Structures are given as C-alpha cells and as structure tokens.
Length: 224
Image (cartoon, rainbow, N blue to C red; front, side):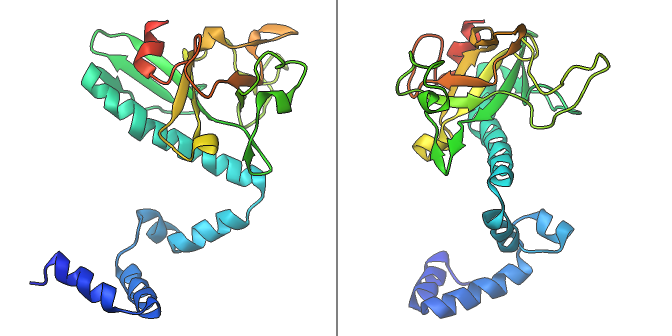
C-alpha cells in the first residue's frame, strides 16, 4: 500500500501540467459535492458561473455562505454550552433557532456586512447625515431578500421587531474571515422613522466590541 508521504512525493515530482491532468482525472471519479451529480455539472463550472454573474447574484450567494458559516463556526460550538440547533422548515424571518437545555429558545437572523463595488461599505458612505456619529463603523442591510404584499396590502420585505431576538453580522468583507461575526439584540436596532414597529433597513455595525455589540454570541444572549 502506498503511504501518504509517497503519494505527496509522487505529486511533487510532477510538472504543473501533469498535476492539473491528474486532478482532472481524479475529479471524474471523486466529485467534490453531491450537487455535481444532481445538476450533472462540475463544481468548477458552477463557481465560474457565479464569478461571471452580476453583483446581486453574488450578494445572494455570499448571503447563503454566511448562513452556513454561521451554523458551522458559531451555532454548532454552542452545543458545549447546552444549546441545540433546531432545524427550520419554511420561509421564516430568522436563520437559526437554538434551544437551551432549560427550554429557552433564541431566534437569530444572520446578515452579511454590506459591500459596494467589491469593497466593504462604511456606514457614513451609506448615509453621511444619518450615521455621522458612527465613524469607522460598517453597515448591514436588514431586510428580506424577496418582496411581497400581505393581506393588508403592506410590504412583507421589512423585518418587524419581535420576529428575531439577535442580529448576527458576518464581517468577512472587511476581515476575510468567515468566522468573524458581531452580535446585537434586535431591540437595540434602529427603527424606521415612519414606522417604529419596523426595523430600519441599514444598520451601523462596529468593527470591534462596543456598547451593545459583541463578538460573543453567549454574551449577547445574556443581554436579552
């Protein structure tokens, strides 16, 4: 049986072109993800399609990546503190529901830090007047992706206070680290001036822990 060390030595002895050919042959029999078989297309092709897409599509992809990293890097480690992730069914106004062994439940909405032209957006760039008191802070867009109208003729895109307990914002755009999040209780978010029961679309997000923003989910839960 060939050892891992021998395999590495053989691969290292190959030219770049030979390594590329070897990778291509291995990829034919070892898909990276089951989705390749479901869609009958390679992961590389899917990634190339995303790279060619418009900003709104990339923003959506980054959003679902943030949701998965939030689950892997933040929610699952909370199990050691007695919290369990509850699977979600349907289109809900939160991305995670965790329950403590005591029975307490917490609803969390995860968002990505906002970007503009491929760069992280400062709150003062979004609105110099509204966010004049938040120099150096970033901004997150806090509204639903899909728009609609409810039975009363009102837009379903805004989040309402009480629909989730904590806002989690991924700071990957400014840190290149998908595991970096900032958390705040939803009651600390800015309301819309004309509708105080609705959460304002753009929310300033600090780069570091300050006030009622923290990089520790357990601490944020303690503020509720």
